[in-house]
Image (tube, helix red, strand yellow):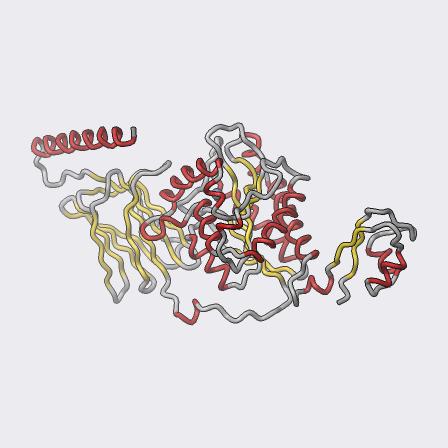
Length: 444
Ligand SMILES: [Zn+2]
C-alpha cells in the first residue's frame, strides 16, 4: 500500500517535472520565478532564535555569513518574496533587521545580526498545517563555563522542573476549535510555577517560558543544569476521534511507546516532530521520544519517586477532572536503565474532545489542574521528604492506628506529646479509631 503511494507520487512528480520543462520552454523568460516566500516567522528563545520561511516549493537556497557587521545572507533561487520585512525583527534580540534584494529572479535576504551565532540551516518537508519550510537556528555561543552545572548547594528547597510541552513552530495537538496544545501547556505550567514558588520549601524552574521550541536534549540538560529534583512535563492528549476524554499521568518509560494507545501516539508524534524539529534535533520534540529518552535515564529510585508523585497527582486530579486512566501509565521496570531525575508526564485532558478543549482554555480549569499537580507533588515530598530539605523538618510520617494503641502509647513511641499529636491531627478527644491514619511529626 505504502509503496504503491510512493510510486504514484513518483509518477506525479515526473509528470509535473515534464510540465515545468514544457512551460519553461514556452516562456523562456529568465525572471520566471517558480518559488515564493509566503511567510516568515521569528521565534526568539532564551538561548536561540528560530527563523522559519514558508516557501511554496522545496527551497533552492545558498547561504553564507559576513562579519563587521555580522550578517547572514540567504539566496533563494527562482524565488519571489511576498512578505513585508519591516517589523519582523522588532521583538528579537539576535536579528536587528531583515532586508532583501532581487536579482535575476533570485531573492537575496540579508539578516543583520547583533553578533556572530552558531548557525544551523535546514529545509523541512510539508507536515501538518505547514507546507515547505526553510528553518534557521541562531544559537548563542555559550562559553563552556556557562554550560557546566554548578555543584548542588542545598538551600532546603525541592526544585521542581516544569516543562511546558511543545512550543514555537511545534503547536503540539490542535483541538477542533483551533486550540494549540503548546498554549494550554504553557498556561498551566505558569500557574503551577506560581503555586510552587509560593510554597515554602519548593522552587520552580521553568524549562520553557515563552512560545518557542526547546529540543528534548536541551529540556533534560536544562533540568540537570538547574539541579532539578523532580521533573513534570505538562501536555494535553489528543485522539483521532473526539470521543476519548480525561486526564492521565505517565511515569515515562519505554513501555509507553509499546502500549496500545502509544501506537497511535507514536504516529501523532511523528507528525509533531516534523512540525517542530529539524535536522539533527528532529527526533527530539515529541512525547513518545521524551518518554524514550527519559526511560533511558531511569533508575529504580527515581522510578519509585515518580510513581509516588504520579499516584498523588492522580488522587488530586480525580477531584477536579475525569481521569482517562486511574493509575499511573507506566513502565516495565525491566526496560528501565538509569535516571537521575524522577519525572512524570501529565496529560491534562483531551484537546480533541470538544468539552475538554473548552475546559483546557479556561483559566479557572487550568488553575485547578495546576493546583492538583502542585498538591500531588507536595504531598508526596511531605510524606517522603528529601534528606536535608525543608520538608524533612516539617513533614509528617503516617501511622495507621492498630488495636490496643492509644494516643499516649503513640506519643511515647514517636517521642512526642499527646497535645502535639492532637493538634496536628485536629483531634477533639483522646479516643482513636482502629484503622485511623494519624500524622506523626518528623522530629528526627
Ligand atoms: Zn504533547
